[in-house]
Length: 147
Image: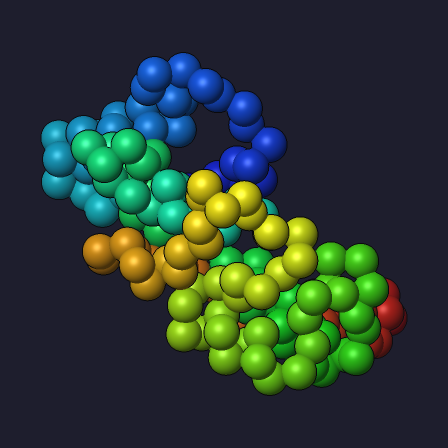
């Protein structure tokens, strides 16, 4: 598994974006070698285009990392609600993340009417990922400090 961090910071307006080309080449490598090779894209935009197939104009990533899970659990356990945690807290964001792949109610994700928000569940076969281990490690550090 290869996790591609912060792909929202890659600005590529080409006809065949680098990330779509990368997912195509990784698929070809997996076919040639008979090995399971998986890309996991992480993007703050929670954009279904990341998960959509290349033939549908997407990037063709097999899965997308969901930081919303971490943020939801973090705010529930620590009570912290500033910075990028400000739109989380309570059970609703966690429930929304578990149901839809990410929490769509974030104010920073307000999208123009021309690009309506879609749940990750709207993409056939899409997978969002989160890590309980990573979340608990970050929470332990936040609660206990670097002791």
